[in-house]
Amino acid sequence: MKCNICKIEGAYKTYTLKEMMFGFKDTFTYFECDNCGCFQIENIPANMEKYYPANYYSFKQDDNKPLQPNYFKGLQFDQISGYHKSILGGIVSFNYVSAPYHWFKFLQVDKTKAKVLDIGCGHGDLLKKLFLAGFKNLTGTDPYIEKDISYNSQLNIYKKDLLEVAEKFDIIMMHHSLEHMHNQHEVIEKLAQILNPDGKILIRIPIMSDYLFDKYGPDLISLDPPRHFFIHSLKSIKLLLEQYGFTIYKTEFDAEVTEFIASEQYKMDIPLNDPKSYFTNRNNDIFSKEQVEKFKTEINELNAQGKSSLGVFYVKRKS
Image 1: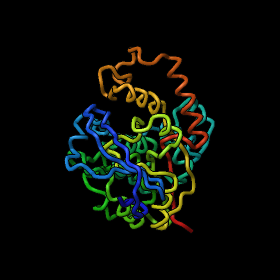
Image 2: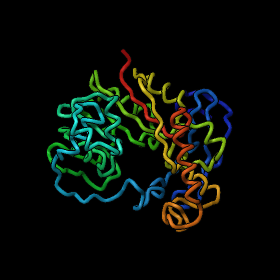
Image 3: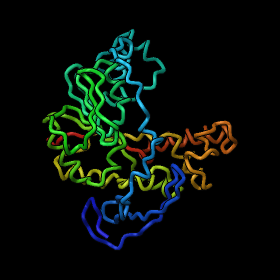
Image 4: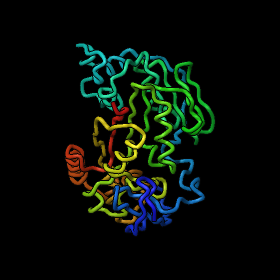
């Protein structure tokens, strides 16, 4: 087998994984590269549309209501991102869940001037939050939406593949989309072409966690076969980006309690969307409140230690 990231051939160890989000339970072979550590699918199924049914979470239909910037959302963004702090901003941001504003603390952009692209954005939920906070130039792309969406002149989403994009941007975001792309090298090369010289890239992806993989193996939810073609290691994502002139200047981990709960369910052969699932019926007795709280504490500790399974990478060009 040949690794699609570092291109080195080897007799790599293979694993059999089951589709468990929708409970198809079809099996797929993955292997882990001994050189770069990337965990990847051996053969991509020809019928991938089967695994993205209408109720796939990112296909949520949009209400298409007109949007107007929101003064208080703007204050919250300014406070949390550090764009402009104020007493009122501190008051309205108290106890506010900071994502997505937190990420911009490290992207450091002028929200009124920055051109932002969100790749694989679905119907643009994140972009709408940024628009409400005062961003003026927002673009999204997603090849799987039904048609182009235009909220107004400042926020447009296009039904197109990344490789079709020609415009340049100051901020490019990929929120759990890179792992779904078969052409990893072409994608990163394209980012190098459309990012402005001083621009930044935000990549959020599942990442190989030795701790969680040792605990759950093929039942680990973030592996998500066959939709996730690549689950990078810290070494492989760094290697891939460096080949195209990029460097990672900050890394965070943002896994949630879902990692534990869903993986525990998969061990019990309960799919994510099953009627017995914790995620479809919170009143069932699969997990006690005490167990859930314990899972929350443990995943927060793993995030803080850099050992969880969802990574946030802040990327720029090498100086």
